[in-house]
Image 1 (cartoon, rainbow, N blue to C red):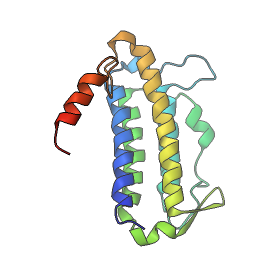
Image 2: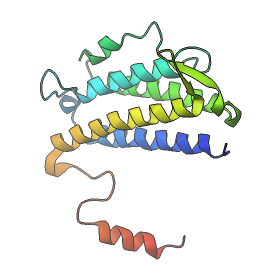
Image 3: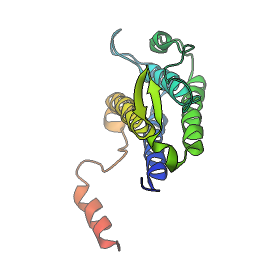
Image 4: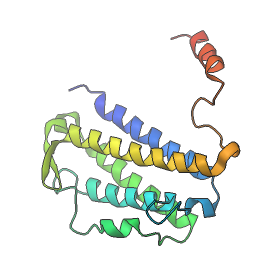
Length: 175
């Protein structure tokens, strides 16, 4: 296995974490809790779910099933967080657990078998599974944020209509 995998996947997790945070910065407290309808999730609910998933998956990652008995997944979908400060604390708590677990891993352990809901995965597969899960939910966060901000939205990547200028700048720099 490549010695670059763990730093690479950590970098991708960090990138998605930043996308979420750049979205939060553009939103009012009220917007963080906005739900389109009772079946939809607010950003607050998505944060709560991500935290619950991260704490469950990454606590004792190599030695216990990723779906912990103490996790209350159903509660993650109740909008009972009260303010931005609590949301950001939950957000950071989940990510700290994830990054702590990744820091403890070595490339030799990527083939080791871990379990999520009693289903076996290599560590590499489990890392990829969680990256895609978190990217899915952070994409939802960004979509909700962009929808709520409308014209006030500040692009997190290349703004519409600016691809040409962006590419000229990139390709004018040395490789």
